[in-house]
Amino acid sequence: MQARFGLEQNPDLMLMVFVGRWSHQKGIDLIADVAEWLLTTHKCQMVVVGPIVDNHGTYALNKLKPLQARFSSHLFVQGRFFRVPMELHAATDICLMPSRDEPFGCAHWVHLSRATVSPPSATVFRKKIKSRHLASTGDA
Picture 1 (cartoon, rainbow, N blue to C red):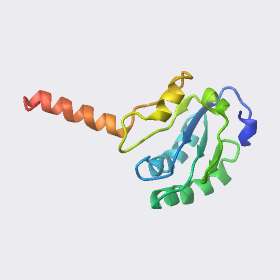
Picture 2: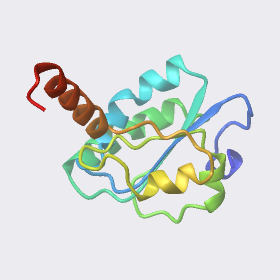
Picture 3: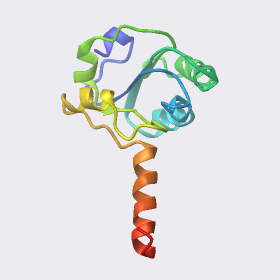
């Protein structure tokens, strides 16, 4: 799968993947903001693909494209509709889904069905923190 996306073929590198609409709702800008840090501090590669649908997607593309030039063997970026091979889901180590609105969506199920780690979205953390706060104050 690494060769198919022009990435270095190295089984020791963790593959992090985002497949989805590049929008505020999906949190694509959050991925763009941490991509350089992930690529420089972790033994990983990233595949980030999907159509740009708002200014957050444009922001992400403008931030990720220069990184793709710098990390060409570790980062594949495609800011448009892209037919994703099903093998990519199976090859993914971590599914990047920092959704602002959905605590758990369809893409999570696709990745989980292939035993891929899919960290909870920011929405899940906000709900847990709020419920813990309410429980601790007796306002629940």
